Structures are given as C-alpha cells and as structure tokens.
Length: 113
Length: 116
Image 1 (spheres, rainbow over the protein chains, first blue to last red):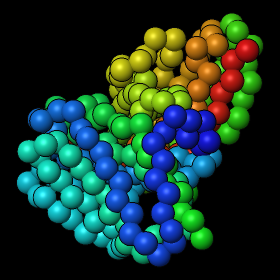
Image 2: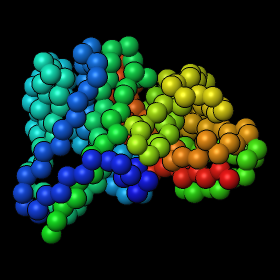
Image 3: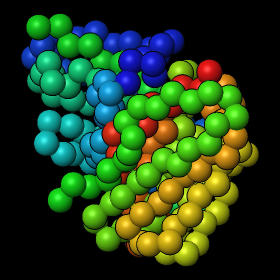
Image 4: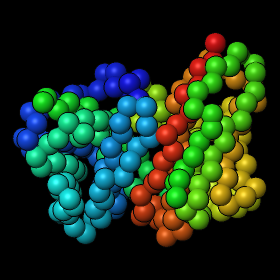
C-alpha cells in the first residue's frame, strides 16, 4: 500500500523502456531468491524466483540475474508498461527452513506514460 | 480459486482491546504465515505454522497469538492491542515442498490495523 512507499528508493522509467531494479542480499548462505511485486493496497505477488545454482532465469518480460560473488540480485523488466507501476522487493531464503526468509524494503517503480 | 483471503480489510482498535484476524487459503498449502509490514521495513514474520495443529514463533511474536485448528485457516489474535501494533498484516501460505523455504509465498491482500 501507499504506507510502504514512504522512504523507498524510486525508479522512474518511460513506458516502453526497460527497467532494472537492484537488490543487495545479506547472507552468503542464502540459496533461493524471489522477486515480489506489490501494488497499492494489495499483497505481494510472486514474479520470479531463482536458485543459487543458477545465475540467470527468464520469465515473461522479466529476467532475474544473480551475482553470488557480490551478493547482488537484479530484476529486469522489458518494455515496461503502466501496469508495472508498483513496489518491487526481493526476498532471500537461508537454509534451515521456511522461517529463514528475509525481505528487502523494496523499490518503487513509476512508469511514465 | 480465491487463493488467500483475509478478513477484515480494515480495523480501528482502542488500546487494550482485542481482536482476531482471519486468514483462509484454498490451495491446500501446508505452511501458513503471518507477517506485518511497516514503513521503511521489510516484511517481518510474526508466527507461522507447518501444518494443522502446529504453530511457532517468528521474528516479532510478542503481543500476538495464533491458532491453526484447520489446515485451511490461520488465525492471528491480539489480546491487548497497543499503538505499536498499528501496521498492515499479511497472511501467506506455501506448499509442503517449502520445507527449506524453496517455494514462493502466496499472500492475501492484508488487513490494515490502526490502534489509537
């Protein structure tokens, strides 16, 4: 919702351009990563995931890149559309179970028509 | 297939009042979770459940209780609400193969709670 937009880094892109959203994760032992999209007033929605034995995974219009050396994750959105406007955040899963998930605070993507 | 449904959507409580947030999922997921979301912070886990009849504490459990009497339902209770519990609460669920957390969470649309 709007309350989680406060103090968030914001990325503004023109409609049709490609967007790149970055995320630094904290634990080198993390082995599973997920990107979520959260629209105003709604819950987070799964976009794409990647396991630590991969460095790239593609979906429909989205690509996730994983650089374990520098603990960096990025989400690329091709041909950004107004419907892509939302807060995007990454999550890292550490070994040891379901409760070992850490969420980032997110990046607000604004698409300029 | 409704996914994860939370009720109510909004609630205002006075300090000291109690309430229960309801979560229902129709995906036959084993694992269910309650998170809170506050400005400038990532989602924080309150309590979670790995199956019917089980519950466990997460990162910020104080002031909350939960119950999982049926596989499809996960209830979050506030016994004596405090202003610090003003937040947006999200319920989520995941499949059984998420034992190592290697499956995405499916979230509801949240309950916005204000405690005055």
